[in-house]
Amino acid sequence: MDISAISLPPLSSDADTLAVGLLDGEGAPPDTPAAVGELLASGEARSSFKALALTHADGRRWLLVGLGARAELTPERLRVAAAAAGARARELSARALCWAVPADGSPALAAALVEGTVLGDYRFELHKSGRGADDGAPKHLERLLVAGGADIAQSVADAALLSAAANRARDLQNRPGNDLTPTALGEYALALGAREPSISVEVDGRAGLIARGMGAFAAVAQGSEQEPALITMRYDGAGAADDAPVLGLVGKAVTFDSGGISLKPGAKMAEMKFDMSGGAAVIEAVAAITALRLPVRVVAVVGATENLPSGRSIKPGDIVTAANGTTIEVNNTDAEGRLVLADCLWHAIAQGAQQVVDLATLTGAVIVALGSTYAGLLSNDDALSERLLAAGERSGEILWRLPLHPEYAKLVKGTYADLDNAPEGRKAGTIVGATFLSNFVGDVPWAHLDIAGSAWDLGREYVGKGASGYGVRLLVELARSHSA
Image (tube, rainbow, N blue to C red):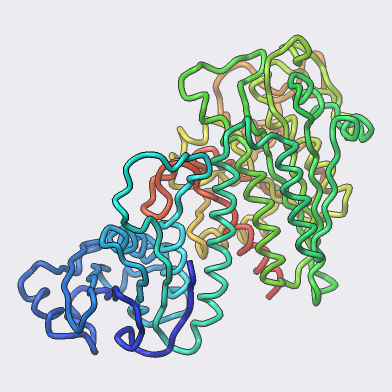
């Protein structure tokens, strides 16, 4: 989709469809034709949130979109409204849509229009054969124009870049396990590094894990014939402040999770191709940070593997040794993500990360606690937590902080080893997972984001079924906060 900002009124554009936001009690916006006012007067067009109405005037379609009260118009609500308008525009076979930035015309609202439209326009069709009925209507908008003041141009361009990065992460998430293997994900990261000289990328396989002493990660990988991939990416932005911390981003990328010997139920197991969502978000966040040329320093680590049952698989009751020397009783092989992350967190810090954020589809418990509205945030550092919460509000990828209390450490204490990866009982599952991980970061400021409820089937108008790309925009906002 071609995306641009214009400083002229929408009617001055060559778009075939013009979107007009309606705010409670404010009537038709200026510079709109009489037909818009008539539709309002008839009651067919309404200002209630997401209400849609259509009229034709001056040789164009006019799509009227309810935005509700001015005081309640946030970027997130505008993302939702933009996605609803974009869907209607596609139904009308629109090719070019022009939005007038409503309300105060702020750059944040202009960016939200872009994000809602581009994310809502996403389709995953890589494996579609093209056979079947086709009504000839365009499946995607070709152009989006955002009309507002001269100060919106950079925000529109940045939002277009971020939305494209999130959609690329969704492409990675949606690919099936027989297509996106750990090796394929490693090759994807290497190709990114080859295209972008500012990013360096290294990929280690099974032998590399063993050489680095990553016994926890290697144990998960040993059940699959597929080679695992430890992906290490580094970006050193020009102009980064000397006192700014090296930001570590760590992503879990289990490209298919059967549960291993502790086999999952068959129902919905196909969704376990999404267990690499944290890794996809980290890779594309690094790509976006680089494209934006943010003056920050980033080291990113993605642990990619399959978790499968075989004669070589790790067994319940086995004991493994992580890279930092901690021994772990593996009492449930379906609690594999924390084993992968344990070694990856340690590796990120060894590579120079001074502040670490990990993203993982770690626990079903976070879905019980928070649904799909919030991702879970657990951290050993209040300042980092506040940065992340603020970044979540700006990006619309919101977080809810859960506690880490010293008493929880008792729950992960091992009987025959230092730690237990899956304590008996069903207490505080999300917190227990984070408490386990806290043993591998030392005193480094760290935050764990459990995105199991947010990574797919998010249910928002701009990211409904399938992969959501959750975390890309959040991580970029976090990096941006360090570059100010």
